[in-house]
Picture 1 (cartoon, rainbow, N blue to C red):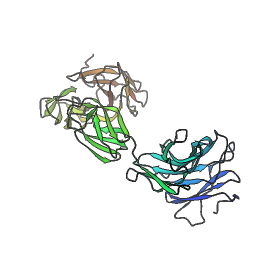
Picture 2 (picture 1 turned 180 degrees about the horizontal axis):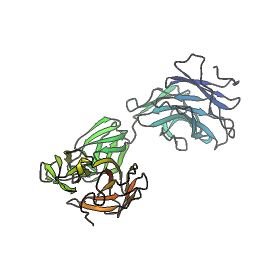
Picture 3 (picture 1 turned 90 degrees about the vertical axis):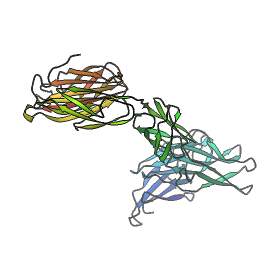
Picture 4 (picture 1 turned 30 degrees about the vertical axis):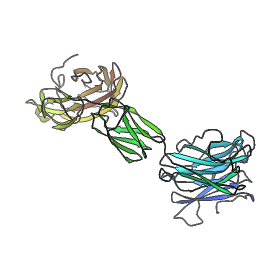
Length: 487
């Protein structure tokens, strides 16, 4: 090996592995007590190798290199894993380390077992689909040899102390060792198969287990809807899912799209609460709650400035999930400038899916010869917080009109609005018919101190809050949006 350079002992070993379009070699050097690694790209000549890396070295512990090495690589990120054994002999000393090399070539070590555990012949197996690293080793308890297993998350590699869980043992075979496995990348289809033998009884023994991990729910969409709504659940470990529940009520139907995605139908009788997915290894529960809505669904409308809103179908109360077209109609001399509430932007007409109570506000500004114009909009959101702020700053423009629309669910009052060094005042407050959602419009006009975010402070923390702040140019100073309604 061109990068070796140092003498080894007669008992040293090496191991080869193909990974991430590379060939890697790890070798022990008991002379200088370091375990080394080097790699070569598949496209490079045989004699071109990367600089030698210290995979395991410790000047304090000293004798950490030994003649046991087992390598594994499966994951799509280019990580490499190794099981190595030290020569340390104090009972509390580390005996087996699991090493991890990331794609950048950095190594980390993770304790698998101490000298008192007496592990040897250790092998590693990667289950990327379930985010697990399985480590199998021979263990000796009271002169009886058996095969033991420990597992850890690939992202953490924290192994429990002790021998581990017995994986292959027999009352009639007392020297089970020389453990071997299929060496393939594991998943729920392959399972985990391990073979060993007893040199005294002359028997081969094996064990096989299905590989699943408890589901993990990361998100779901939509966040609300009536019975019959199809909800897409995202996460991991969904393969083999046996149940999906909405606040304890089993889904009417569900389909496992992949290990990372499930589609489930909200069942009749479900109520607001968390979503859970269950497989053989356990259940995963969502952090957020799914809100079950019930008809009739009410659409509350309001206007800011002279104008009106049309609805198709009309009425504002809908007994079933309905697509409603909302149109903003300005009075003569005014133009429509945008939506706030459960509609945003300036599309006119726009469409809402009425599967819950909603609230929309249409904003109108004076035409002023067609010169008034919406220049920018910045928004932000928060959950279970008494403040909500725009995610990005608004631009400082002297004389511009800034309108902030703050929507809260459940309904909360806005105590104050601040930002841009301007004085903000309330224009209008509107609540839905069931007092579930409220919208407040605040305004500021003048010469901002500079670019900045806008923040609203609430009298209590709602489930969700959204703020949208728009900047308008070429509007009249002093009374840019007509009469101001206080309170």
